[in-house]
Image (cartoon, rainbow, N blue to C red):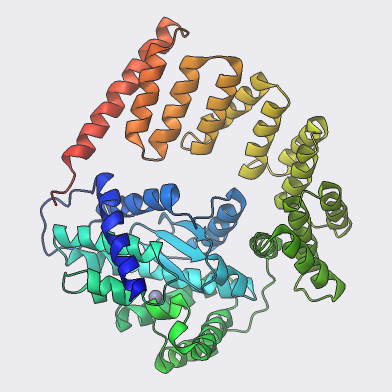
Length: 480
Ligand SMILES: [Zn+2]
């Protein structure tokens, strides 16, 4: 009961938040399915909310890069290879994954940790991707009118915010008065079977072991049986029937046996998520005992996890001992280089850290963690000019990288260039969908005493652009 009340309150609190950001205008509501553009905008609205306000959102460039690399391998094997997917992780012990409108796919850390092979994780991702490519969400949402879509959004966010509560789907149904909320929360059986079928095809085409899908789903079901009323989230939204598993096994029998090696990064990401659990000392003990008893899937991952745990415990020389072990094991991954540089930085040795960054970035020029870390170290080493040069050069290649705009703003600030600092900060906010904050930054840039005529006219032009965009969004807001 108490739980239901909490969820109802969440609904009350969250709905205005989501709506305040400007709900997309659905235009002429018709019987047609939601258009891909509109679906993307609905997804962006929810995603923006998750990034800014969801406390369990894992804002970790390495975890995100790994999930998106795995997703890209799968995406390349789907008929719609050009499809835009974005994967993200939430810190949550329950086994769950979900697809949001517009191709955003969320995975709980608990599910990543429970996967014993990369193929198993890929199986869950490919199932979720199939819900997107088969337009299951668009088909469900297309049947609703505008007001119902608004309600759907509120319910979706409430469910996200209170995912771990076993009572949540029930409470959300109680809260959502619109008929058909149940169907919106639980995919129909037909959709599930289609997602299984397409998911297995994708998994096979992408070169993964398709048995991973059935074995993982079966393990999850066993887990569900053990905990009866506290089934893992994934099973609550994706009811697993004996029939479904049977279907899956039949398809898998037709597939060829394939031994697929896991990537190093799969093991390292799992170690990273585990190293973040409990107190720093608990994490150290966990990995130390794994190594002592040789109870690990990969020694490299256990050493990496121990290194990260030592970092959390501020035992930097101990972290560096694990880096040395990883080098001895010939574990090559940018994640190991980032651990090495972080350990040097934490001890104030920026010169050595910067040398490591230069070497590592020759091997992994597109790695974001190394790039951000390098700029950060340059700033800490009081080399703002170099930091600015690096950030600006990279922005030429990836202008929509919000974090880079933030680092550029810091570099300008260190150089005492106020106009440019506020201008860069405005771009960061604009990319995060925070238009009001972006406009405020540009107004500050206008008032800056520095900057030449050319820079001021650039700021004026950008301000006009963003004010128009903001007015447009306000105009499109749904009346509720
Ligand atoms: Zn599903």
